[in-house]
Image (cartoon, rainbow, N blue to C red; front, side):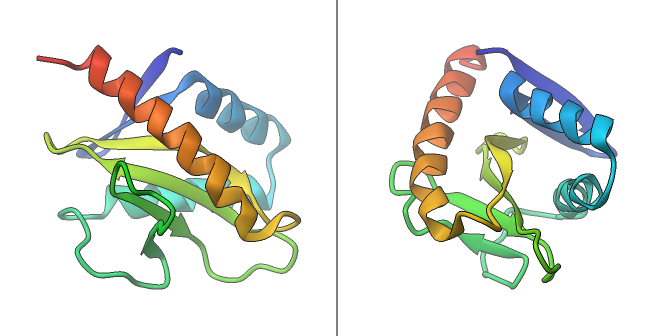
Length: 131
């Protein structure tokens, strides 16, 4: 699994090739889902520190027990529910741990598979970035 890094201002966001492909497809399609996903990434860009309190935008993923995972969500848009699952690495980088997803038609059952994906991505990230 390849890990891609992009610098968004002063926050380094690492993500998988799967996430990169998802972003590429959204960029090719254009539209509201792309705008919303980019706004979720922008939320990360504006964080000064790892969140300690939940908000409507940032919430802990309750199903994530192995790693402290957070989900980033946008305000309500009819028919679209983009979500981004992230893990904040102890070294300060933000790792996008699971591909973003439009869960509008699926609901919360998506989180169980997202946690499994996130755990694998974080494990791989830790192996690649072992000091």
